[in-house]
Length: 59
Image (cartoon, rainbow, N blue to C red; front, top):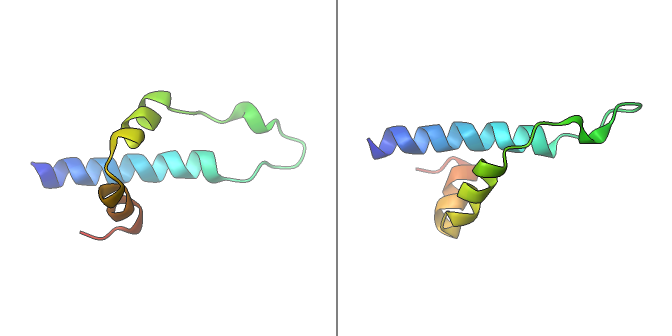
């Protein structure tokens, strides 16, 4: 079960980083991106070691 939760966290993080990390396109409003504040709160609560594993994909 913890493995399934970790996989979901990894997928959620990938979506979050893709949305917030992309560069603004020329002529398009840069603030038009969706932003999940609840997921940001969850990321802040993750231990640094777990966050590093989540980003780098280490198990």
